Length: 126
Image (cartoon, rainbow, N blue to C red; front, side, top):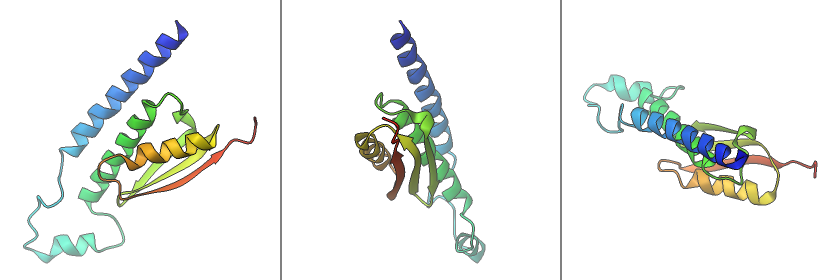
């Protein structure tokens, strides 16, 4: 009974995250904005990310978190996900080296991910 509840809770959370991802992903796609004025390219070459990149990074982060939620061997509450310009950084602790690899595999499989910076560490408490 407890296992059924956990699976339903994970599935519900994954659906909610995926709905958010789909909503954000449709907001602004790369290349849709006209770049006839120099203002857009100047803003993109500045220190901060463009609004389009921020939306894409947010969508990637949400998609990675949703993917991690659907993987029963991972304790997603112990894994932090951050994305910057398509590079996903995973940090936190997991129980096994296999979990480190699995989390990187899940993150790398998300559309739009350019690279995965896997900073997960194996919890030494056996």
